Image (cartoon, rainbow, N blue to C red; front, side, top):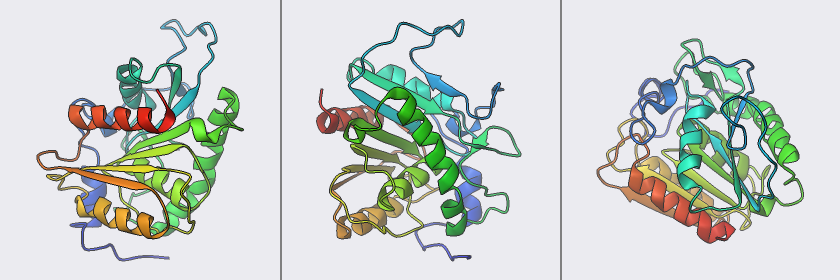
Length: 254
């Protein structure tokens, strides 16, 4: 199934080619290219620099990050480090996307022909769900999804929004940075509050994409907050990161 893009995207080519240029505080988020030993290595804050497991701790919350195209979990892990002082007793996990990108890094679904095809997002659900389920089971939150939050950027935000709006994952909160929703919500829910964050100067995915998503999600019964940052491009600014962690603290508890 091929689908024409909404008019809030300049072009599918611009969308996925330019997704790779993310800046401070996640400098070049989607172009991180460090090698990994396994396709699904997970970046965790409870492993020391020598790879030895640290003492286990009792975490009240779990935040899972989803990076952008050609990214690595290690880049998103930097946000988790900066959020530790605000979200105490929280485990931050930043997995690599399941699929390799031919130019380096990882991707959640293929865009080699630079076409945003909803069927590819739907086809990627199994691998996404398998990875998320593995993390949630390992961290012991399978019976406490209300204490789990998804945080995604760009392609990672697309997958996180799809996971929630399809009703597959009823987590405690979702933060989307510079995301969009190619597929309409198929589930009505008030269980997962959603914060849509977008730069008004974003020329890769226009901020009207998040505005459109907000309308669709609200119509489906979701609790949605939308904030546009006028001078921010396709990136995560320091202000956006502060607002996101404050939102999660309010939704998941301090």
